[in-house]
Amino acid sequence: MGDIVKVTGMVLSSMPVGDHDKRLVILTKERGKLAAFARGARRPNSPLLAAATPFVFGSFQLYEGRSSYTLQSAELRSYFTELARAQPEIYYGFYFLELADYYGQENADESGMLNLLYLTLKALLDPRIEDRLIRRVFELRTLVIQGEYPQVRACVSCGETEGLRAFSWRKQGMLCGGCAPLETDAVGLDASAVYAMQYIVCAPLQKLYSFTVKQEVQAQLDRVVGRLMEQALDRKIKSREMLDAMTG
Ligand SMILES: [Zn+2]
Image (cartoon, rainbow, N blue to C red; front, side):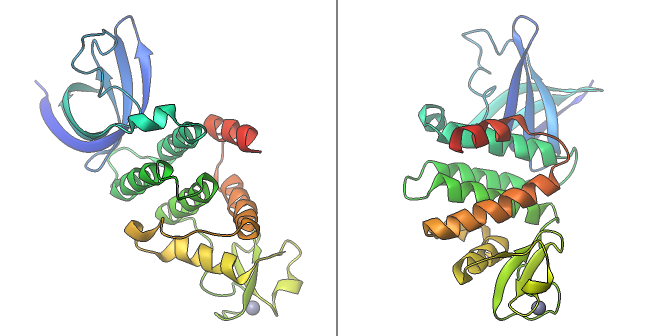
């Protein structure tokens, strides 16, 4: 006999298996990323129907077998159902789930990613926050959680903390006005783009989505964070390509 375990998490993906079942990938606080079978979840009257859906957040009761988990029941706290009807927000949402899946590890502490995902989906449903900004905040903060982020507090060449005005991907960080001309891949950044990146890296999670940026600053964030992600990812992310194609 296996054990029943209770975990808090979010469903990242749901794939049909056989005639009536689904295979879920759930990002959990207690056991990291895990796969669980939801037996009968494709039957219209299944009690597992709602839980076997991407984006749902709550607590899940799982039966732990020798080689896999089976979903027994769930108490859902958020469904994010409005997201399914929001365009293009739903495409952003699927990309965020796939990125969380890409980085998710079994039996690791994934509470940081889980909290970031939850707040980010909430932000997507808030019309006051631009989707493009949400994307770059989520990407850069994901790199922070994964420990792969650039130096944003000081010049990577000389350590100066004032007058930062460029970014180098090769050096993975900010450059001051004196060092920027020496790096061939440096791109200039407005002071507010520098500040935005510092904020995204350092702000408390709950305050992450409390700022806005001007168009030119957004363009700089798109360029810098977009290429950082390309460097960080070692395989193609399907939903990312779809989003890029849609948002140009
Ligand atoms: Zn410098």
